[in-house]
Image 1 (tube, rainbow, N blue to C red):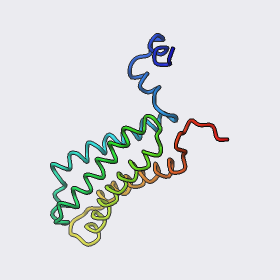
Image 2: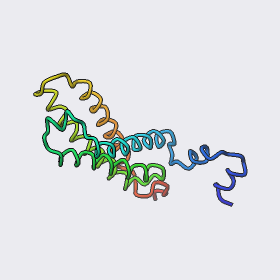
Image 3: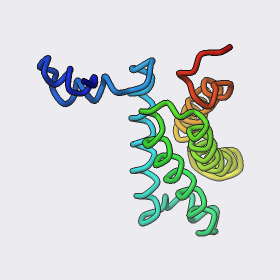
Image 4: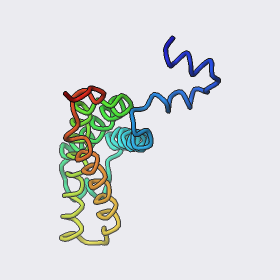
Length: 152
């Protein structure tokens, strides 16, 4: 009998069973699952309605589609891999997401320093997002291909 059926017979609800299937540490997997979900939704939304201030300043829609594509692809890969603990795939997810957010950060920093208006809040928020993804990449960078194996 598998753990799935044991938990179902024990009276665990579907949400609790889903949380129990997350890779350890579960709270970290749940938080980054939320981060990847938000990244996917924001990236897909920005395909159809790109940020107007960045679009006017950058004047390059291909760059904005590249940013939205990196954020969307990183979010989708991250959602798929974070629950199972497939670190080797999640490295690519964090790299794509970090690349997309990093490009947006570079444009935002350029506009903050050389453009008109106040964009410091946007730059600060984007900086925190880049740091969050870099921390995750650092966390999973030295993890093995199969995290449950016993090191000999």
